[in-house]
Amino acid sequence: MSSRDAHTFAWKHLVQLFGPRQWATRVLSAVFHRQKNAVVFLPHHGGPDDVFRLVNHVLAHSSPTAFDRARWTPLTVPSAGDIPAKDYLWSVLGSPESEPTPPTDLRHFWLAPRFQGKVIWLRGLTCANWPAWLDLLKTYHPLAANYDDENRPVFCLPLTGELGYHAPADPSFENCEWIGASDWKNAVDWSDTLFFVSSSLRQRRFDDSLFQPTPLEEQLATMIVTNLARWDLPLASELASAASLDEIFDPLPTLVRVAQRRRWTKENLKSPEWSEGMTERRYAVDPRHWSACLLALSDDPTDRNRHELRRRIWGAEVGVLFPYVDDWRKRLVHSYADYLRVPYPDEYDPVTKKKKKPDRFRTNDKLALEVGHLLEQYREPGSTLYGRLVEPESLLIELRDVRNELCHRGPLSDSVCDQHGSFRRLLARYDKL
Image (cartoon, rainbow, N blue to C red):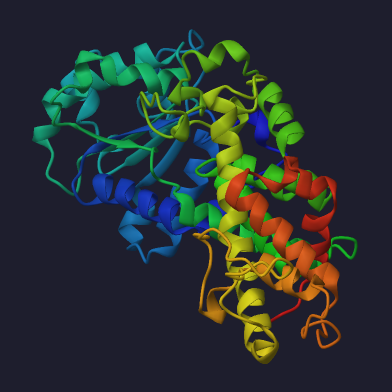
């Protein structure tokens, strides 16, 4: 991860997730089995140091042979201009006393014993020093066929941010047999983030005596963070670490703060870049593939970017709260079926006794009654339900308000339902069915 997100995310979380582990396995397969140099394209929010540790961990725990472990050679390249790439590579892979100066003949250089069988991960590649290393590696390709598979040296090249974004346009990467490109996009998907967020909140509940959400609150917080973060694990960590549930349910301030730390601006809304971690996939133009932090920078409530942000929150609330409200509805209907009447609403006005106009919501099935119908029957004069309802009337009000808000308006965190307290009281009331 980038240094701007280092305080919110630890690399060790990557090794717990299926997607990143599979991605690392593919990279290792390319270099150890297919004997191809691996070029790894990374956005800023998936930095090379954490990805290196991930690959290193997978290598150590995937039962490699001792030969494979001996081949693995991570190197940190110097800054541009400090030392020529050829001289640096020669000095760190061999004994300075034997041949301190690399041979001028490239054939003798690349076929030297010090390179044989090495799998070299180059750390520290930047826009400044990359051209020199690319030029050197181009000279190796024509000589690679002189090695047998076991002794051929292979390179892993992590290209991050702007470097990773523009490198594929280099002609050297087109139809190149010596390169096996591996893009970080889709390495983390929704299920990885869901597992990470769920584990983080559960661990926090065990460690923090002041953070003790009800099961419904924890489930809702997990889904909101997952829907907002999607592939962005540092953002997921930041949201899940919010000081209170209120900050998770109303995440806009946190999203804006993270965007500012990443130095994103409203101008980025015009042309979001994958290299900066703003989009889920390269060249995405649909806001559905944009980072929630970028969407939060839109201050126009009618803008499609802000609408997409609200839609993600609403989607999480519907997925968690709608089944909960409906479970309560069915429970109440079954418990008080003898005191509920159908058809409902009535065909005849109880005062004038005249037949009402047809009502498209009228039902003859008690199981089809909504929570609002139960509340109306409870409040009617002479109701057979009144006095027999064990649950408080406030529960019916909360269930009705939450259901209606989700159906007809949008996220509860910015609705009249939240202002009246029905949303928060229902979460706090949680009763396991």
